[in-house]
Image (cartoon, rainbow, N blue to C red):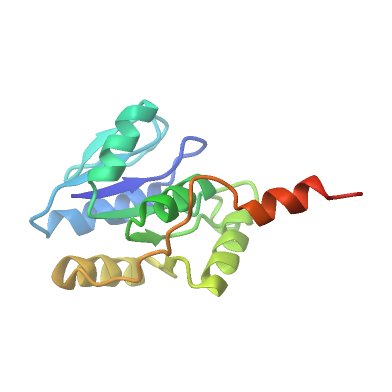
Length: 160
């Protein structure tokens, strides 16, 4: 199963529409968390406009692959759970968000080698198809659920 998640703030019709088209030609289940304000007509994915945290976690954990916007919560969840993740960031120039902070997030995490970023819809489709055919993708390194001792100590000593 592939889980498509766009966060809860704004619709992300470019991603939802693209994934629905990809799902139409593949024999695999797609589940999407979409905005109730979306203008997309989705035909090939099971969609939810709201998922409780426990429902979201259950679907996220069952997914073979997560495809998402560049939301920090989704990225952190993928790192903690070592989930294969493909990101298509929202872009200000396409009026998908109020700022380009998702582009900055992608730039930072890409430099670390922590995320798989689709630059456009064609790249997204290629990455999803490659994953389905080969199950090969850069899996994010594991991130612990808690801050490291070194980080906690540096915060304690900050400003001393």
